Image (tube, rainbow, N blue to C red; front, side, top):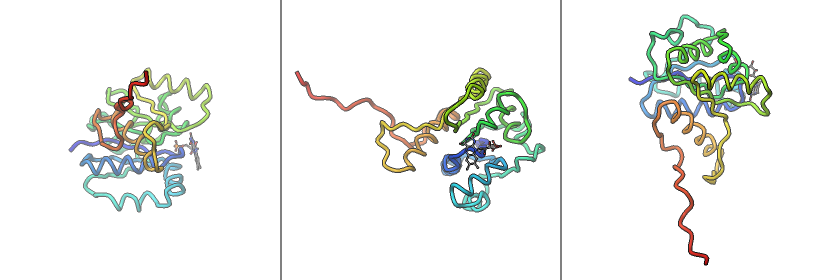
Length: 198
Ligand SMILES: Cc1cc2nc3c(=O)[nH]c(=O)nc-3n(C[C@H](O)[C@H](O)[C@H](O)COP(=O)(O)O)c2cc1C
C-alpha cells in the first residue's frame, strides 16, 4: 500500500490538514499522521473536533497516528519507506527547525529523513506577513529539495465556498507530493473563446 506522512502543526489552517488526510484515505493511500503539540490544540480550536475524534471517523487500516515526541516511531528512519511527506499547515517554527536541521520532534525528523533520502517533501507554509528569517528558511528548504507551497488559494476558479479554497490548496499540495491529480479542482483551460469584436 502506498503511504505518505502527514504533519499537522500549530499554524492556522488545520482544516487544510484535515481535508488532506480525508482525500488521501478516500483514494486508498495510507497516512502516517503526526500532530505537533500545538497542532493538536489549534486543530481542536479551529475545526471543533479533537484529533482523536477525527481519526476515529477514518478507516483504521489506512491511518496510523504517532505522537510528536515518539522519535522511536518508524517515520524517524530512512529504512521506513514512504512516498514522501506533506506538512499542512506548517508553522514558521516548524519551517525553521527543518530548514536548520534541528529535529526536536517527529515532524522535524521525518521531514529531515525525506530530504536526506531524496523523497518528496511539501511544506504548506502559513504565516503572513513573512520576515527575513522566514524568507531565508524558505530559500534553504527549496535549495535542499523541498516544495514550499504557501497556503494562498487562487480566485480565478470563482470559488463559492470555503471548502473550494481548501480544496485548491490540498489539490496543489498533493499534486506536488505525488504527481497525481485528485479531481478537487478544475484544471485551468484558458479563457472561453471570445467573439470577434472587430
Ligand atoms: C490559534 C493559533 C494560530 C496560530 N497561527 C499560526 C500561523 O498561522 N503561523 C505560524 O507560524 N504560527 C501560528 N501560531 C503559532 C504556533 O502555533 C507556534 O509558533 C507554535 O510554537 C508552533 O509550533 P509547531 O510548529 O510545533 O506546531 C498560531 C498559534 C495559535 C494558538
